[in-house]
Image 1 (cartoon, rainbow, N blue to C red):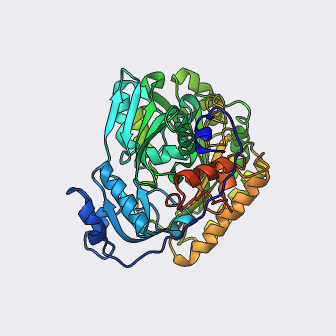
Image 2 (image 1 turned 120 degrees about the vertical axis):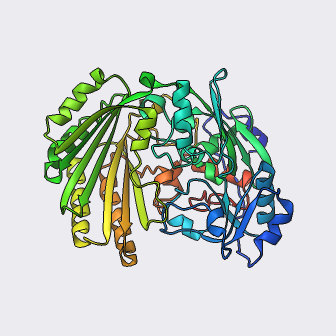
Image 3 (image 1 turned 30 degrees about the vertical axis):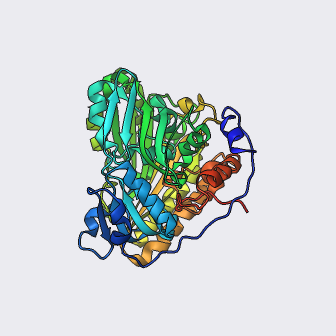
Length: 491
C-alpha cells in the first residue's frame, strides 16, 4: 500500500504492512557547543553535562529513577532551531529527547544517552474566542492555562497536575478529573505542528497528513517534536466551580469503602470523578484510605453522593466548592517536586474486584511496615466516566483504551538505593493481581503512566500496531523519536 493511499483512506480502520530498517544511535564524545552552536539562533542556550550552567539548561526531572544519561542540553529559541538540532543530531548519530515538565518516567528512559532538548521557551498561550480554539506552545504547562481559561469561561480536557506539560500529557490520551464532562484530551486536539525526523516542519490535522495526526493522538512521542497544538474549546461546567469532598478512612474500614467504590462500576455520572488512595502512614504506623469526590455541578446534585460517604463514618471529611484555579492548586501532592527517587506503574481496569483491592492494599501495608524509614508508597485508582470517550470512534485515534473505567497508578518513593528493585517488584506483583481480575483479557496500559515493560500492544493495542509500524517507517525510519516507549520496527 502506498503512502498516498494510506493518507487518503483516513476514515477506514485498516491493517497494513511494510518493512523498515532500524538504526543504532551511538553517543559520541563531542563538543555540542561547537557542533550545534554555529547553526542556531543567538537566543539558544547550550551546555555540556560538565558545564557549570548545565542544571539551568537541562529540564529538571521529576524522578531520578532510571533517568536518561545526558551528554548535554540545548534550550532552543525558535522553530528553526529545533529543525537544525534534529538534522544535526541525526546526521551525527546523537540521540535526543525533547522535554517539558520533566514527568516522563519508566524503565525505557534509562536507555537514552544523548542530549536534552528543553522546550520551555515555547510557552505561548493563545485563546481565540471567535474560533473557539486554544493554541499552546510546547513549553506550556497545565498550570499556565487554568486561570486564563477560567477567566474566559472556557475549558479543555487536561491532566491534574499544574507542573506537567500540556502537550505531552495530551499525546498519550489526556485524562484527568474533567474527563467525564469534557472527554479525552486527544479528542479535543484539532491540529499539531511538529518537526519530523527529516527536520521538516509539518502541520498534521484531519485534513493535512491525517494518518500522521491519527498517530500523534496516542503515540505522539514516536513521530516528532510537537512545537504547538491547537485544541477545540468547550464552555466551562457549572461556571467553573467544582464540589470537592475529601475523606480519610482507617484502613480497617476498607470493606465498606471498597463496596461503595465498586457500586459505580456500571453507573458513574459524567459529572463525578473519584480518586481512591491506599497508603500507609509511616508516622502514625496506620493504614489509610483517602477518598476524593469531584463533582462538576451544583452542590445540591453532589450532596447525595457525599452523604453516602459520610454515612460510612470517615475519620476526617472536608467539603468545599472551589473555582478551577483553587481546585487545581490543591491537587498537587508532591508530584511537582524534582529529583526524588520515585518509581511507578499502572494498569487500566474495567471492573472492580474487592478481594483484589484488599490483597494489593495488604501487600502495600506489609511492604511499608517492613521498611519504615526507607519507603513511602501510595496506590491511587482514578475513576472517571468514559461515556464521552466512548462516543468517539475507536478508529479515530491511536489511543485505544476508551473502555477503561479506572486508571490504577502506584508510586514508590524509595529512600535507600537498596530498595529500588524490591519496590519495583512490589509494583509488578500488584499489577499482576489487578490484571487477573481487571475485566480485560489483555493489559490496557495508559502509556503516560507506563512502567515500561508492558510492550507496544499493551500501550496502543495489537489492532493499532500494524498501522503504527508503517507510519513509523514512513515518518521516522531511523527511530529518532520515542525511545522510552518505542513502536517496534518491521522485521
